[in-house]
Length: 467
Ligand code: FAD
Ligand code: NAI
Image (tube, rainbow, N blue to C red; front, top):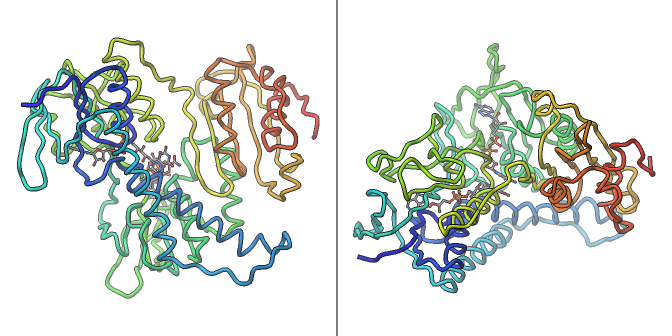
């Protein structure tokens, strides 16, 4: 029987990063993965392929609609979808192979098969051919991630009714795409297919898009997406999909109840969230407790109720984000090695990779109000930023929320081109407990979009220069 210091089940961003950090710290490590490739949801059917398609479709839109305005004539731009999908597949291949290389480099044993926890200290691996072997280990980290949430009565066939996985491989651009859920997946993949020519309608149960993001940010972002041609039906739910005809007939009705309306669509994308994945893991038999939402229950040190068994990433509480899973992977490896690993959940950025991007870190105005914390707001629009004006990319704004008494920055929110890169100086500021004045007094290169971040910080004290 092979014997290890640590066996990690699942090789998504949580699991593979955890394994590498543990190996760096001198542990003998194995990973167990049921898919043929490493990298989990993120690398295979999530972050990486969606970003490749967002990148390619954005370039197409630029060439088709923005190049002529800049005085660049190159004839009519056309979409070659098979090649674009190949470009996306190459991105996945390069990244998953990269993880395999890192496992070898760090002398991590990789087992292909489904992992099951037999007890503390024992993991069974069952290969595709049904062969089983048992690994002995001092510690187990569960990093089995999440799966698509299903909509009752609507069966996903990954052809006409798709989850995000099917929406990454549609063989042709749908004429009409109906998306259930105005969350991150709906808006990112909706943007991809709208740019490529689909007519996109988004049906959202709540009366706003992007729940959890700052309300003002979400409202402005919705207006920008509508300007781009997306249609929203808020406060509305899908009650069924009739698949009998050539076109799908989607029944939608007000969330609070009311008359049912039928909308035709070529493809329906169900993007109503994700659920923790614990199927076949044997947690019940091993006595590992789940919380009320089916997630593996952990304490502040990622430990479950069974000694020597830990869990991280999408399968536990908190944001379902790759970088949150990665940071937890590093922290738990350090804790197991006797170090002081930790994750600051107040400083985890979130980015929607649309055009423009939406990025945020820390608290929203709604959260501060609910917590009764007095705060000051500093805002600055990209219409007043020199670089944004010169590039004619002026949509959006930067917003800081700072404690009214101490000026400590509690939240930062950006809508705009490159928001996903600019958010990181705000994240560092929050991580270091910085004030808006700290950032306002930090020199920023001119002309950059980041100057809008500095000006928003200055405007917490109502002293922006360029507005
Ligand atoms: P996962 O990545 O889900 O990995 C879990 C792994 O465990 C899988 O490989 C699975 O096969 C394996 N596994 C499960 N059970 C077993 C078992 N019993 N035995 C062996 N192996 C098992 N997040 C971002 O931060 N940025 C983005 O841009 C982004 N884009 C996304 C786009 C889409 C379309 C989707 C669906 C998600 C996106 N996410 C993004 C979310 C991100 O993918 C997840 O938060 C992240 O992958 C979670 O990592 P994880 O390691 O916890 O789990
Ligand atoms: P989500 O939780 O972001 O959004 C789901 C949306 O569907 C919500 O607005 C919700 O109100 C709505 N909804 C739920 N049930 C509904 C119903 N019956 N009818 C209509 N609307 C309904 O989930 P999403 O977009 O599926 O993404 C899943 C996870 O993947 C998220 O947690 C996200 O963090 C992660 N992700 C992250 C990305 C990024 O960081 N850029 C990109 C894509 C996904």
